[in-house]
Image 1 (cartoon, rainbow, N blue to C red):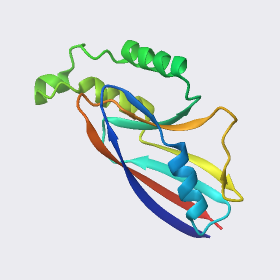
Image 2 (spheres, rainbow, N blue to C red; image 1 turned 180 degrees about the horizontal axis):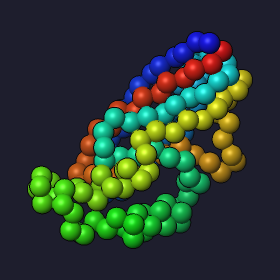
Image 3 (tube, rainbow, N blue to C red; image 1 turned 180 degrees about the vertical axis):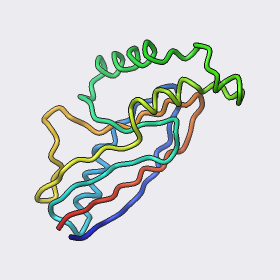
Image 4 (cartoon, one colour; image 1 turned 120 degrees about the horizontal axis):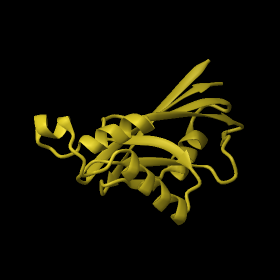
Length: 139
């Protein structure tokens, strides 16, 4: 069993900015020394998440609407009272989404469904530069 690790940065706009990072992950898998195994895609930070979705405009808007229902931006969060940064909703959304996902790969190809893409979602209330960690284990 071997491992391979890489990172890259993504500039975001915040406010539930959803970015398709599939092509960047595919490129890293192809460049790695591994042929088959699993790849974990993770973020540092507590106001962004990683997931998969069919990346099309209608569904992207539906997902944003769902997050607003689950953790409304303008609700009264104790976090905001304590820290005054106004991003309590971003922490809740990121916690629900999670900061990583793991996907198998075989013959240097991600094993994704036909309409499945890997996304980074920045929930914070300001633009950020996010670091994505790509850690692969396999052979």
